[in-house]
Length: 454
Image (cartoon, rainbow, N blue to C red; front, side, top):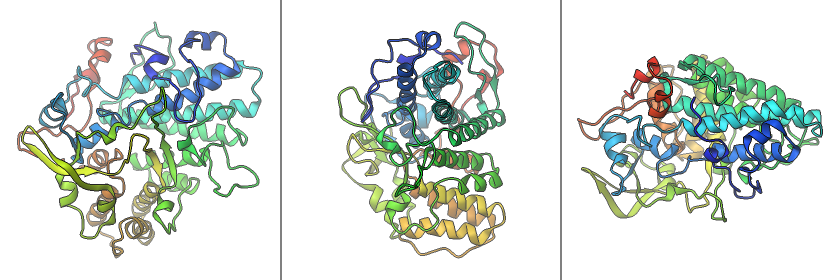
């Protein structure tokens, strides 16, 4: 991949409760040649900030995927591309919209590669500390690579990333190789975390509260969770995306999934990106007043579904643009410091339902599905049915409203080969991102650059 900047591209600044310091000085070259406890731990904390980079920007991951998946609109009159490119036309690899979700993830991956390569050269770290740093950095690397996969799908990505900046570029590989690499990274990371002791030698953000130790401390804390369980939760998501359902069930068994949630708080247990209004930090821009809920979100909701009332309300004023209108606004994120989920128990239960159904445990599948449906939605439990098409529709409904505006709907429609509902007949079904123009300019004639968004 083409890396046009290093620490500056990752956007490493002080975040929330994190005191990272100036990571542009020393440079990544200094980190490579003269790693120290201070530089490695600061860079490790910086990986969290790099991973968060534009998840909650107005044209970031959740916003763009929400528009493509017909969850949301952005009626920003100053930038017609929110409609003209994301809905009406094809994604443009030369724009900051269609060329998105590539440079940022790969810049963070470059930092993770560097940390993994130099950590063994810092004699002051204990063996456990080295292992915990490797497990942490590989997990974050996998999350960044998962962003590339989710955005580009069968257009692929680069997995041979640990190369000199002035050397040849790693090849663009297809989706199967990309997802296999993500799984490998997570599994390697799990082994490293298991040997990583009970404490990281660096700070994690408050979004990782309860998951900020490599393994569960002994004696167990009041909430016996750990970063290793978070890693296994992400691994379960990746296995489901790969339709490797036995592997998903195994990973879920090692995650923090709770099959008997009593309250919404039980479903909300998980790991989050943190934001704040503090000096130098990033705010959650998903509260942007130009962002509206797609009208179908209200129209398609079942009567009495508590998730709709909790997550969508009537906007202060109607929004419109290029023939589209909405009167609904999201209340998923309240205020500029609102956290954004990376993965929650609610999603894990839905992953468990899917994995069980496709491994012929229909009663177990509906037990997990109904745990979400009744607790989060306040709806009557469904009767178990072996019909696959019926189950998929039921699963997609629960995922739509339980994970509303968290970045899942577009991916779910694509992986179950469901057509995108078009607002107008001449609109495009953009189902994957093209490789960005800057990347293709660096690899002229690469077949992957001939692939488009539909």
